[in-house]
Picture (cartoon, rainbow, N blue to C red):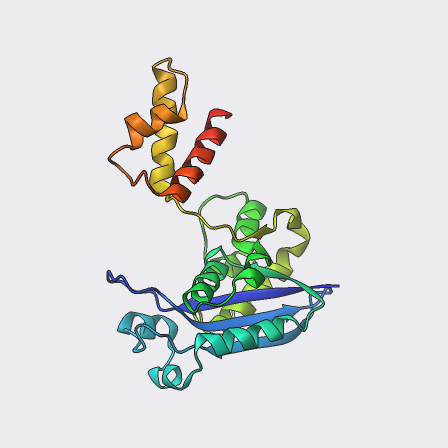
Length: 249
């Protein structure tokens, strides 16, 4: 039987520019069995490598005391503990609010030079997208807003990983029967950004408006050259695939 692992993480995001990576500083998770009964929880703080001193923005947002971070284990230890906790399930589906949680775990796994195969093969369901489909709306909402909409009284502190996972599990249970689990996903690396993909889309539209048959070579020479690094093979291959999908629409 498949368990549902409701996952939430906190990371040391910041309001200032820096070339230092953001890191996961807390993992919280709730295990629901196939009957949607909560059977277990996981919670751990992580001491970051960069910005070991939490900035005021993060301290205010999460309420995590600096003293607790100072005493926390590093990522390698905590992620190992978390994997062993996950493997208590015969099989599991991760449930997240958006796609950022699994992405951050994978990025930190790579930063610490650990094998990411476990996480790349894990399936996850984006409950935020599931909720938006259920409500037939397009604008993102917070877990708290979803609970309010469902008339569920939230418990715990927002922006603490375990409390957020618990609140997310309440949304999950409330709309479970309306969710399409065929839409579960696996993490996929993305090398281009929204602006670059929009440039390709606009190039296709411009060529069609000029009665020109869209061709990738024309997009590169007339619309992308001098605007992005053409020697980034992974990015260019991804944009070419995006172009191919766009011209079939």
